[in-house]
Image 1 (spheres, helix red, strand yellow):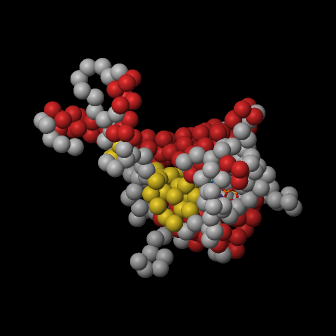
Image 2 (cartoon, protein in one colour; image 1 turned 60 degrees about the vertical axis):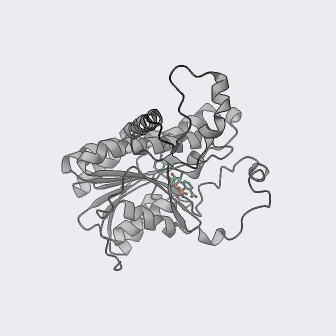
Length: 322
Ligand code: NAI
């Protein structure tokens, strides 16, 4: 592929939490490729300067076009203000990257209610607050690209992150539904499960991380990952997902230690109970088949799961093996 063949000329991108970390990387790369970028972040640096201002200064310094938004993604008013600012300044919204984030880690029974609410608000609820006002614009123009930031914590689990894992898992469900609703309107929605060296975890460590990790990593920490945590690795995929060229939707991708891979929810062929009720003992007897992952499908919508079961039942009735 020719260098820089993907561009965002004429397009407007909103990146939340873009004052540093991954979001800043996305904003810089989008701007470098011609997008006008709304850099949203409510944070301030040690010198009191707005984090979003610093990103915008970098973009402008490189010859790009960007504006600052300091509203919080955590409220409906904040989300609307971010999208309104984009329209006021640039006249349209083509891309929304829901990226802003915080951590409030702790064991499930020790989390304070405000730790739960804050994390659900910044990650899961924020995706509604920011994406909904943009959605109607995207529908009207028949085009949009939305990225939701999920996490391996939500997909696979991590001790000490009940609030965060729930929010991130919720975003994966939201992505599935929005992809289906956006289909007829040219709006593609995908999830990213990133891993990158940022400061997000600096003030909120995982409780007893290595104690719990030892269950899965009996030989100790894996080596070789540290050098592969540059945010640019994640930006390469996210920027593609935002592009006109990308026709993927309803999918999720992990970028971890330099490995790019699709993450999916599949359903095993399982065990099809004969007509009539199944007992608890029937279920226990067939657990090996119910849990067997050697044959599975990845339904693109609820309807495909139902159709798959109907197909299995038909084959069973016809005496066709499998
Ligand atoms: P970061 O801490 O460097 O950046 C997050 C930014 O969001 C900060 O600049 C912060 O000021 C901003 N922010 C926080 N609350 C906000 C609010 N209410 N409104 C607007 N902005 C707000 O973190 P990082 O690592 O770049 O994370 C970006 C996203 O990626 C987050 O959603 C995070 O959960 C996710 N993620 C990151 C991973 C990693 O390895 N760094 C792993 C998995 C997910």
